Every structure is written in structure tokens, then in C-alpha cells.
Length: 241
Image (cartoon, rainbow, N blue to C red; front, side):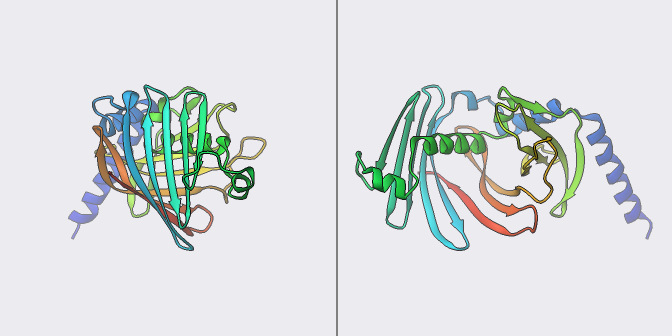
């Protein structure tokens, strides 16, 4: 049987050709066209739930509201008996702890609850659920060279992203299906003071299934693993109210 090896060789050649011809910004644009065909992200206003499952902890249940036009973010997170609410509207931040709008400093300190943390959570959720559209934000450096990689049993087109020092020091890799341009994996590494990647740092995230929210295809499941040993960290599960 020489047909099968020939077909595999032909597919490999075709895949290699695609990765050599497409440039970084072009790949990103195709991915955005797949995930946000009507350019809805810039006016996104919606609410969704995220359940976080981790091996050694009870589940955390979060309700998230993002309203980009009005610069509004709301997060209500519950784990066991602790419920925390952050509201960030433009430059104003408020915190509610277990239903109390004026929690004591002792309780806030005990649970590491601050407006700074609220801002970090806002950036975290807006970034992750705004991908790949968020890769067009100022300060993002898109590598023009698209590479190919076989990862987790599948071939991908891979886009490398870094950031201006004022934004961040991590280096990210985004894995796209070579036919549909769907984003299915992303991965990040820390860097040292010279800007070199720390090979044993960072994590990779496997994305499975999709949900359409406000016309945007978002990953339903995000499973997190360490790069260094493939150790499983947890899964974020997206759902609607």
C-alpha cells in the first residue's frame, strides 16, 4: 500500500506550504473573522458564568458582566462560604464581601481582597474571553513568522505574541486550526531579565467546545496545565445565566 504514505506526504507538504505563505497579522485576522465575524467585541456587553474546577479545591462559581462601551466590569465569585463582589466602573471600584458593602479591613486583608486585585481580575477575564480579538490591543507585538507545530495529537498554525515592557514580559503562543482558523490552544512562558524564555515556566491551555455569546464564538472549556510537567491545574467552564 503506497497510497496512504503518499497521501500523508501530500498533506504534510500542503500544511507546510500554508504555514510558510501566511503572515502573522493575516493569521490573526482570519482567526478573528472566525471567532467574531461581525466585529461585535468592540461593543461587547454581556453576562456569563464561569465554573472553576480544580483537583484540590471546591468549585468556584463566578458571574461576570463586561460592558466595554461603558467601561464597566462586575464579578461575583463564590467558593464555599465566601462570596466576593467587585464592581469597577471607569476609575471607581467598590467591593462587597458576603453581602456587606463595608467589610472590615481585617476581613479584606485575611482574604487578600483589594481594588488592585479587582482590576487584575477585570484584565484577566476581559483578556481571556476577548481572545483572539484582544491581540490587536496597543502594546501587542505580533511575530510576522507563522510556524507549524504538532501538539496534543494535531497540527496547528502557531502565532507568537510578545508585549511592550509597559504591558508585560510573557511570551505567548496561539495555536489555530489550519483549515478553520479556530483558536484551540494557547501557551505562555515567563522571560528572564534578558528577555529569554524560561523553558520550565508558564502554562498551556486546551480549549474545547464553543459557546456563542453576543455573536462571538468563545471556548466553553479551558483546561490549564503546567508546561514543565503537563500537570493538570484546573478547568474553567463557561455557561450562560
